[in-house]
Image (cartoon, rainbow, N blue to C red; front, side):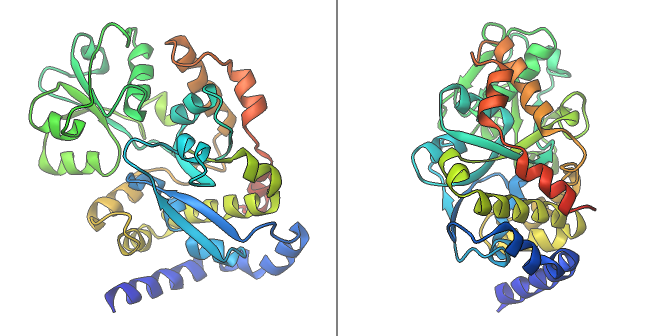
Length: 335
């Protein structure tokens, strides 16, 4: 009964928040043409910062999808690999992760931004700034993981050679956050709900917060990507997926409490308090303002500078991004 009540409250909020757009929905959907498919598979990730895709199910149903699947990914598998293996059609992930996949030739198309910021870098008593990471032990899930890619770019920005000046600790049995809490490493980069948990326990200090610290706060963190095959063969369905997720991003801003309840009810997290804190802190309302292509260019340049990708930003943007749907929706979904 509580779960059903939570769902009803969320749908009530959803109907109010989307009323203006849904009034015109039948005419708009008819103009777009029929869905090429009513099936869509979306990645179910551990990080709660990708809430817009997690709570988009009812919006997707309103767009005409009948078979909506949230697919849990195996440990260590990111969105590009999951798309390459045919497990999902769409997923949000960090821009450097998508760029790394594109550099390896994985057939994905980056379509839209999700939010700015989310990751925070924590240091122990010997680490007061990013510059202090030189010579320190830094925990990551694996080399090439989101933490490793982001921290490498961040370190290089202040003149640290991430390949030689940082002692990377990867592949430990404990998570990097737990290793940091246990005093086994000097620093690590966390994604929600990890920063919320560490701050609640007063463990370590935040030396970088990407939602407020420049230049990271000036670019998107998570981006939405789809299977290139799905995008090419199902353009109407693709646009409707993007629209549902962008509407959900707006809902994260207008009703963070309702979205947090839905994340718990949907099994995406068991901590309502951390979910609500994340939703209130992250800028989900920047997708209309910031330039998604700038984000891809910025991180591609940074990753190429540290030798983590070989492809040029121009090649990646020309061949692996499609902003048509985003640009159309910016006009359709005016605030």
